[in-house]
Image (cartoon, rainbow, N blue to C red; front, side, top):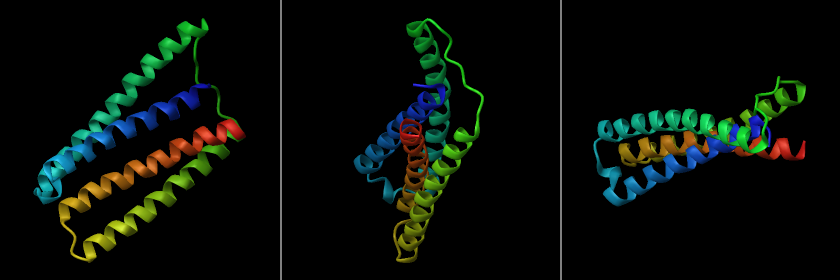
Length: 143
């Protein structure tokens, strides 16, 4: 795997872990009945945890892969193929995020709990990021 593929896999793993934690929290504490400020605070901590996970995991994976391969795992210079993959992957992420945003607006317009809307917003953001990461992994493998 290349550095870009490892990076996409790390991001996907982080998104799955953080989203899983928030889903468990929402279901176990019935978080959709909580005040929006409390839920939003959890979301901010989750975003910070996601960033920290991505940084630490990238460093650890780079070191481990470099030791196993006995050569440095470096980010290659981006070429036209990388630019095309990034553009297509981002487009896929935007489509997922747009659909999620529309569903969240419909949920709130129909009188859904605002805290559930906050959880749904975070889920839509994570799903959009996951669509981007999965698309990159697929496009690098088939392209």
